[in-house]
Length: 515
Image: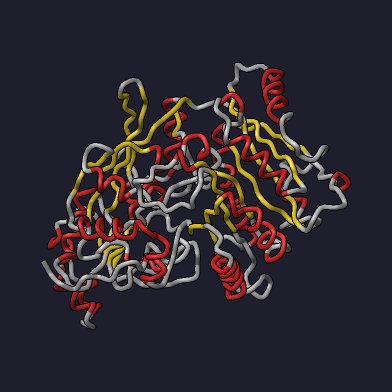
């Protein structure tokens, strides 16, 4: 098959390649190779890049993944990208004239709940969607992973290659802190089981490693008992200082009973703008945002603290109310702007699915998404708010502006994830959902806005790190990894010396020297 692929790479007769049924047998793949239907693999959720691969491969399992990588290693040019559900933002899962592995074909390869020393875990495929993991764990076992992302139509391997954060991360850490073992296919085509004690350098490298060291085919994820219900609550602040004081109080408690099970927050415009303003806060149509409760001294934006409390069907409503009132009683939010709703646990975790359906209806889901995701240090977040939220973004972005704290002690410094300094840092996520131009702003304008924010941060020496980083030069990548750049390069040399994997990240150039 490599001969056929190389002919295509160097301008050969692609039609003869596409119609040749010998290719698959040469690699002895159990899955399929498609040279024609490659369009989807050349796009992603970000919608700002289009890079057509040579072929899309749907592997049947780990052996197919290994064979594809080994085959690519016998070529001077071929690269391999693992694609999950296509939610990259900047072409990270693409491979120009390379091979794209559609990992969703492996989603059902693993699912087993195991008990080790009294703790429950679930072994799942790297190509499994988190929403499917949730449903099976809860419905079949009454269990659930501890740490999530807000949107669950993402693959296990995809989020573990970045971090995976949501409102539970302050308590349990990101998803990368909740995995104890993985099967990984390295850039050499080796299939290795790794953990903290076995092939540990690979284990830590792959977690948050942007796909540079291996493709995750199985992950062992920690579980806990799944609650029946969730009380979901939003309260409002006019002062960012008040907001940060309260949200940091909630994430810094020593005892779990002294806080909520989920803590997030967002910025919204201080106006009746239906997309960016007051109407985005209430849960239900019959819940009214009373703007008279906002002090006259409030600025162009306000802040919403979003929390959730787990409980079970056997808990009396008055007991739940008592706990909620006790926890909210410590906060300094604005009176009269308190919104609550009760959902099942699965409804809560799948809440963004409903937002997806609405976005698809109005045409903003398939439009480009020039999102910006950052980690900003606590020491700089007040200044960041003054300039970014209150000036650059004071009119909103056509979607959520998330800002909430995380704790560095819940993350493992041995992984490939880069964080700002200090115990407390903030996730800042600009999740734009805008109508196509000219009904909405042009993509170029939104990208320019992102660049303005980054330029400001660099000029004022704001301590930040990009989440889902995407840089164009080695110098920028060196700046991102800082003193850990050498370790990152060494891991690349150890596990993917020919730079075959994840070319869309644009960190390393394919090594043309054959082994």
